[in-house]
Amino acid sequence: MFYPNLSFPKIKNRPFFFTNFVQTIDGKTAVSKKGYWPIGSSVDHQILLELRSHADCLIHGKNLAREFGKQTLKSLKKHHPNLPYLIANRDLKKLVSDIYQKGYRKVLVEGGPTLLASFLKEDLLDEIFLTISPKIFGSSKDTLTLVESYLFPPSKIKKFKLISVKKIKDEVFLRYGRSR
Image (cartoon, rainbow, N blue to C red; front, side, top):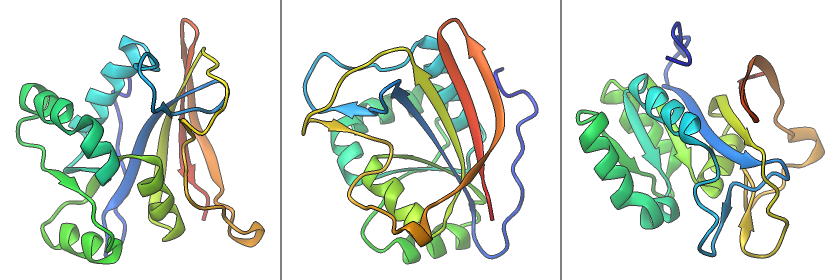
């Protein structure tokens, strides 16, 4: 296991939300054209599966679900058949309340970048697991970064602290916790 002693603190009145992303050296998490996926290695994929095993619930945004929903369901059936899979709607506050009432306390938000922006905007994201893949895609209207569709004002920039750094071959695996 990559994170053998992984634990998360309890948050009062809401679940602990964490995310897992892979990005290129130039900060791209997705390209809408074919031929760019997967971004990370098999180690990155194993970490994704490991982090899912620590979650009570998995959330995707509607765009990510549309693109990778079938693949996610197939993976869940094989590796985590009891992990609830939810697709976020526009009412994030209701979603947070609903999943907390259902008893989910550790929630993995796999994205996409617009959903992640919404969680950050509402100060809900507690940790980020980020893989840096040794690739450079460049930039065009077809590329996405970790957070899309929202630019935080200077007074509301989200800050995180580095919890751990691991390196395997040419990939770097970062874990960040929210600075409060």
